[in-house]
Every structure is written in C-alpha cells, then in structure tokens.
Length: 417
Ligand code: HAM
Image 1 (tube, rainbow, N blue to C red):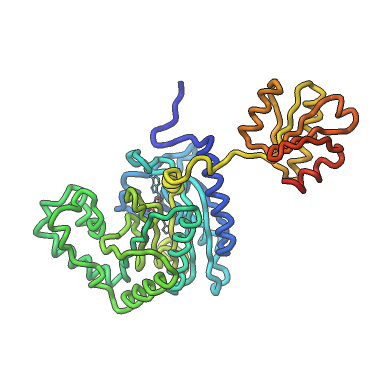
Image 2: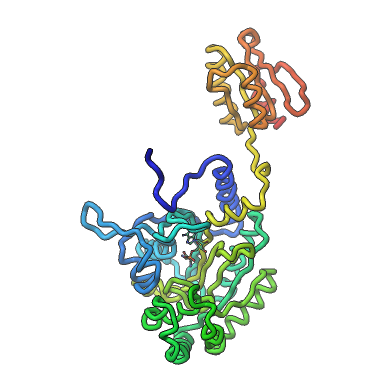
C-alpha cells in the first residue's frame, strides 16, 4: 500500500469542515479589513530564499525542499510566503502609485523539511498578511491587532501576543557587539549550533531552545536597553496603541525570529496551552530594496492554519461543526432518480443546499442518511404523485407532511429554509 510522505496529512470529514469554516471566516474578515487577495507560485527560484530569508537561517540551511527541474533550474518549494509576495510586488511593479499603502493577504501551502511532531508538519498551510509602503506605527498596530482579532473571531481565546523590538540597524549593530562581548568567555558552554550562530547570526542565540536554561542565558544584555531613540519612541507608541485596541500582549525581549529580514517590531501569537506559535510576524523595511525593488517599508505576519485547527479542535465539541443540508431527495426507482437529479440541480442553483440518494438504498436507509445530514426537509418522490406533478414534502422539524406542486417547490423551499 502506498502511504503519504512523512510530515503530511490528509484532510477529510469533520477536519475538512473545520478547514472550510476557517478559510470562509478568513475571507469575510479580510473583506472587512479591506485587504486584497494575492497568490504567488508554490515554487520559486532558490535564490529568492537565500537572499530574503537568509543564508544563515535554519530555514534555508536545513529545511528547504530543493530540486533541479527538467530544464536544469534550481527550484525551491516555498517555505514561507513573504519572499514570494515581495518578488511578485517588484516583478509586477505593484507599487505603481507610490502614495498607496498596499495591503495583501494570502493562503496556501508551504514546505519545510522539519522534524515532524505535534503541530509541526513538512507541508503546512499559512494564512499571511503583507502591507507595503507605510512606516507608520499605526500600521504596525493595525496588522498586529488584525491577527489577534482574527484568532479571536475564529473562536480562540487562550493565546498572548509576545512582542519585541529589534530596532533599527544601528540598534542591532550595538546590541550584537554587546551580546558577543558578553558571550565570548562562555562560548565553549554553548551548544554547537549557537557556536556557529555566534559568528553568523548572534541574535539567534537569544531564542535557542537548547541553551535557554543556562545561567549565562538568564543574564544576557537586554536588546530593549540598546534601542535608538527613534526605535524606542516607535516601540512605546506601538505598545500604547495595542493597549488602546485591547490587544493582550507581553513584551518578550528574547523574541528574535528565525528569518533574517526583520527589523523594528516582531511578534508571535503564542498559545497559552502548549506554548506553540499560532502565528508570527514582523516589520521588514529593507527587504524590498534587498531584492532589487524600490525603498518600500513593509510589515506582515503568517498564521499556521494547521496549528489553529488543532487548537480549535480542543475547544469545539464536534457537534458544533454540523453536517447539514436543507433538502434530501428520496427516490427509489429509475424514473424517480432521473426526476430527482434534475430537481436537485434546480434547487442547488437556487442556493438550497441539497443532497439526493445516489445509491441503491432502501427508503428506510435513506431516512437514516437524511437524519445524519440533519436535513430540514425530505422530498419523498414517488412515481404516482410525480405523474400529477406533485412532490411529497416532510418538514423534519414539525414532522408535517404536505404535497407541493412541482412548479412551486423551489419557491416553497427558498421561503422555508
Ligand atoms: P514563521 O514564524 O516561520 O513566519 O511561520 C508563521 C507560522 O506558521 C508559525 O507561527 C506557525 O504557526 C506556522 N508554522 C511554521 N512552521 C510550521 C510547521 N512546520 N508546521 C505547522 N505550522 C508551522 C513566516 O513564515 C513569515 N513569512 C511570517 C511573516 C509574514 N513575516 C512577515 N510577513
């Protein structure tokens, strides 16, 4: 038997319903926030990730799915969405009108060769938001609260926004120097990965999971003490705005994020139950330029839909995602079935959610199926009544039975569902 690749899963049944519920909710929500949908390819030129996410990041070094296509091109399955959206922005010159603040959202699968475990997959689905051409801290507050409010809208309560500022370039230069000075005498006590990070990407030592309990890590210099005056004033304003917008956040000065493109504000939506990040994001004011575009400040985040589904499943009784239809068409013989399939089409095209017996089920079994679908109405076809142009209808709530003229059945159901 063939089996699915490690770190992937099939989505069906109630889980698929939950996924549909989440994506429908996201689409409604993003319309109210007035963000535009964007779709970019699932695979891109490998260089895009080297130049954006970063050569020294774990994601690019250890986690990408790379292959050479039949034309000899170096291709990578996207591990995240930001780089592709930035590439699309530049390639299609979406920034044509330089006064516009461009607000995009996307939804799609990403691929990371990670060690699979609860909430960590090799094929994952992200919902993401990217906003370009505004460096106003009001946008930071809008974007962070958007993710926060969306998680609430989906029904999640137990999570907190962890927030930090990495400041501007000068801040990070000063802080990196202080951090390296502090860590130098302790270098041999750090894990092998952190010893490499010390040279290549020292900030990443801050959120090392292996070394986190060591005493040296408890007394690290605090990046917030190194913020430039401008970075500090932005961070303070952001915190005030988030409080005003009722966003539940806590400052976490060890939060640095694993992708190289961030500056200023970074944050994660952390589940209080298991500590997993439901989503994360940050500002990235220099990435568009680094990828040969104009100077366009930007900010965004990604939410992990797989993790959101796991969190929702813990709190939603399965009965809250009911299977239900408006009408179930019961038919036994060939004549009834052929009539039924036409009737089903008419109803469906008029937005009456309809199911029909498409098997050789007995009437008794069809009643059971209709019950399992919580059908509001049963349309019980029989050849004799059909000859007179009549359809037997049973209202499943009141148990009332009636015969409705076939020319009136669509209107009858529309006005009664
Ligand atoms: P990220 O932190 O790498 O950021 O991923 C965002 C979210 O995707 C995570 O918080 C998590 O919920 C989910 N996620 C990541 N890896 C996995 C996995 N292996 N299995 C399941 N879920 C996962 C980014 O991807 C950035 N592009 C976010 C961003 C957008 N920053 C600016 N704009």
